[in-house]
Amino acid sequence: MHEDDHDHGHQHGAHAHAHPPLQKDHDAGTMGAYEVLEETLRSLLIEKGVLSAEEIAAAVDLMDSRTPALGAKVVARAWVDAAFKKRLLKDTRAALLELDIDIGTIAEFATVENTPEVHNIIVCTLCSCYPKMLLGVPPAWYKSLAYRSRTVVDPRGVLREFGIELPRDVEVRVHDSTADLRYLVLPMRPKATRGWSKAALAAIVTRDCMIGTALPRLTAKANPRRTRRAA
Amino acid sequence: MAPKRKLMPRKGAGGRAAHDIGGLSFGPIDRAEHDLALWEKRTDAMQRLLTSPGKRAFSVDGLRRVIEDYGEQAYDRTTYYEKWIRALRNLVVEQELLTRAEIEARMAEVRTRHQQAGRQVSKAKIPW
Amino acid sequence: MVSAVVSARRLEASQKPRFAPGDRVHVPARPVLGHCRTPWYVRGKQGVVIVVHGRFRDPERLAYHFPGLPAQVLYKVRFAQHEVWPTYGGGAGDHIEVDIYEHWLEPVR
Image (cartoon, rainbow over all chains, first blue to last red; front, side, top):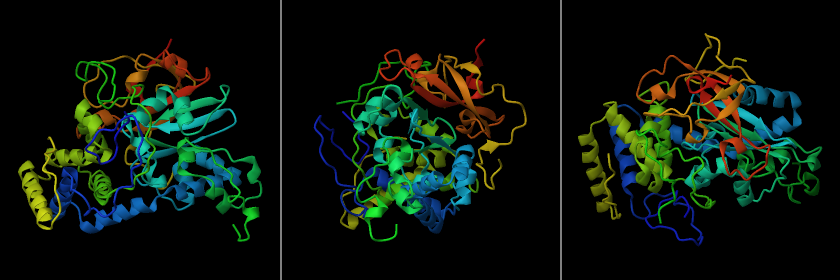
């Protein structure tokens, strides 16, 4: 039985089946009670002058603008600029400001670095804290009861589910985001990327690389020397 | 089939709280990706605005506290944003920004309006 | 290093933190009433302070609309996985790090 973190009324059996992404158009399908509640609170709070429709829309747009591509840009910069990487590890908020990324007042950020000796993986067992102001909203699985509960006690099993097998002599280090720090994993730069541009490097850094559930993967397409266009 | 939890006394008896699930067993991880619905994005937006230094209606810790008090069954069977919109509702009432009566009246109006526009609307009640 | 915008929840240091990086600490197994950010699985366990994060408003008080003062020093504490979980099946050198507030830590003599 897995954590059912999407809009279903039925229980799941042991078999897996594909779910289409939720419709963005909320007029399709039955309107759930919680969707009714959201419209209720929003309309009342606007009427009372507590919130405005404009600031709600702007806040929605702000979160839409924060994506893993932003995090990938930071990682690529750290890979090519050793002094920036040092600053990123020491004070992530300030380093992001250098790139005009303001993480706001919700929380502090910290960066943990993968090395040949240590592989880091991030979780929030108590709720689902995540560096949203850099990476955008977390994936459903990050918020699931299964991921939250199991990553702390069986991180290698979780990594195996994500396709990563690490030797026993590599330390697997779990970070539980229990307070006001949000964690970002700085993955290791693959050796074969020597000479790559920042854009080409950023293209191989996925969201899951920065959570710790993936490693940057080189593909034939990713190598800029194989393409005609400038990377 | 209910998720397996170790049998432990609930919070208040000094035991493991409903949300404190590190180390428990909930089966394999479903990695399907989902786009957020607009109502979920707006829930997230309202939460950020209401807890921001500019408004300070309440803190994100207050929202978490309310969610933690839902109890195991509700906790395990609601989605992330279902938990948060319910918590926003409870906190705006707790902080006297809105009343329970206003909210219930508006819920009925919203349901009726969408039904009249031809949409199926859930009649389920969300426990306070 | 001071940055232009800081979290509203982080406060300037005034008193000396009780613990320093490298200190061995113990998480007491206290009964908890109300909001708490120290997970069940580290209660009664020993770890080592890795980072002193600075002072933050206390979430256990913020949760009930109090200002969360006095601020608590927040620490990153590292635990050996095989000490946290009796049946841990991973590497002997695996660790877990948890951010824990000062009032949830005791010194290990």
